[in-house]
Length: 354
Ligand SMILES: [Zn+2]
Ligand SMILES: [Zn+2]
Image 1: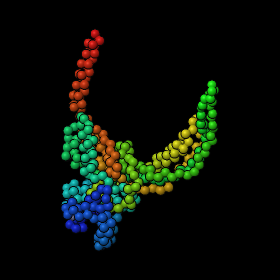
Image 2 (image 1 turned 90 degrees about the vertical axis):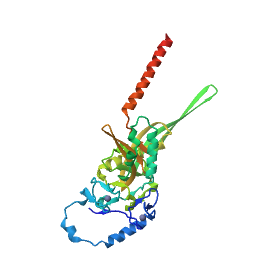
Image 3 (image 1 turned 60 degrees about the vertical axis):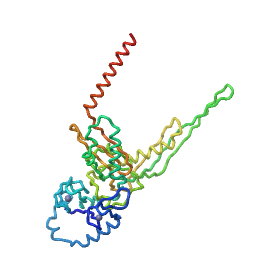
Image 4 (image 1 turned 45 degrees about the vertical axis):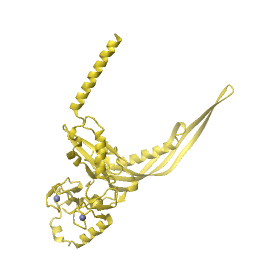
């Protein structure tokens, strides 16, 4: 299975993308290289490799993207991945590896929001959050557990839609004042129309079935201003997954969301009226363009008492959400103490009343 590993042009060591920048940094010789340099270098290397038509012809029917194993080009170990994993790190030697077939053809992303939050920041924020919680198991914040915090690019379908609106209705405005002994009420009735086309951009749906969609919703939104055209070196040193939910499967939901958004926008525009009656509300939506996009997240999964807990952080904004494993024995002890205290209070209360 064809793979790509970005190596330091100065010393040959494996290099990783530095969040929030346009370059990579070598952990050994500390030299930095821009993504452009790396892409140019990669093209040069590719041009040097002779094409081997016979070998390709020999196995025409094997879907390379479905193979689950590859040999690490650094240590030679055989590494097994999920069939959706497109960028990973060798389990044995920590060499970052990109699996070419899973990031090419139909799986080639249009856009990427590169990581802005680096690993240290993610770990520190997790520790601050976990430290403020009581009753969590002691090893929840152990170094071994912190090791497992993973920077991963997740696949999303991002759509831009347009909505044709034709809305008509009536609303009222009333005004009350007193003059002498008389109270006056004036009611003005307005007829309003909202017609036109609005663009609803950047609506997204997770294109990956192995993570809980609702959990990831709680770390949205991702902002457009740091979105880039996809380039391979952004992946080096991070994990990435390719989509396993097709564009067709999310089209209906995205269309519905574009519609909801358009209707809400229209309603906001006449929200100053009272007693609104809508006489006509026609909204036609259409998705006009798609962008297959990779979005960054820091993820920690934690197994405790037979259940898996997930902590997720938006790799762009730092917005985080975590499910908390509660240590039942610590919890039981404390609630026991609270119960005892409450019993004492009740007795005291009873005694005072007596
Ligand atoms: Zn180096
Ligand atoms: Zn290796």
